[in-house]
Image 1 (tube, one colour):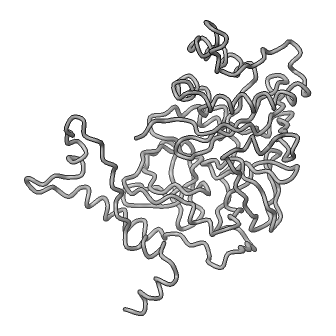
Image 2 (tube, helix red, strand yellow):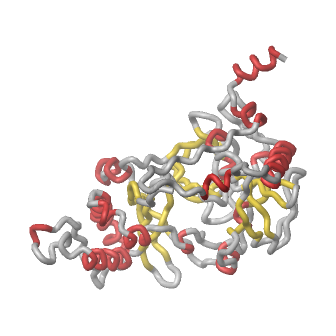
Length: 391
């Protein structure tokens, strides 16, 4: 596993919040080394405290010894009258330049634990406003005109554009309604299947199942199945509404074998597989109480199969592996994992644990060969016709 670092930080705008009292937080889109993009929210006072600690950690680069050696960017201190919207707006240019300068610093600073920890996703970053709040947060995104220097802000981060395949009526103030054919920019793809989008002056959470990319069918974006499985715990009970779903009680432990972007993951319980809402799952060994508070009063996003009058612009329809295929591949994988090794035969785990000669360059891991069903599912129509003609 390589080093963890941040590729780029972009300021998206700021939010005016009213709980517990009126204050402003800035929205940052953080692009990590694995190309994942996360939205985090920070008050200016937090950013300034981070800045002060960074200067203390690197006094030479902060110009504390010789002002001519300073390379850490300047950041003005907060003022007593900073609780006004005009001040929050005026700081956006300063923060954009500050983040750009941070990413240009030597790696000992730009990749130091203090900086990485500050921009990591916190539990409160994932918490959506609830309908019980008397007044919802007001979001102000950076406008896409020359005055806001949007080209400098986005840099290598480009918001993906999607199209609505059907009408969607929002059910809460934090969501955004859609009409068939609407084109939106996706700011954040949350694992829950709810994506934060913007469209002209509107913004809000939208079910990923109602969206498709403009350039290609969306199943190409989903990761490959992982039949080794990852242990998760159900933090909320769910009763299957479709034949290909699975019923779980709160507290049951299962294995996730396929994380799909629409928020409906394929899970395995013993030899049974089925779709289950990802927002009702929490990784094993992590705190469950806080995660349960986050989903209180929230429902799972609708599945694509339940959408009526969906209209896609792509000729190739959205195809996914059937649950029979998942179960067959899963059973085959588990059988191979349980199969006893012959004497003198090195298994995959033995090869991973074998010590390497000192100074030898570590070799990259070879990914497992995909199953025949998955190869047929992913190959082009031309290849499928050729295979059919040889049978």
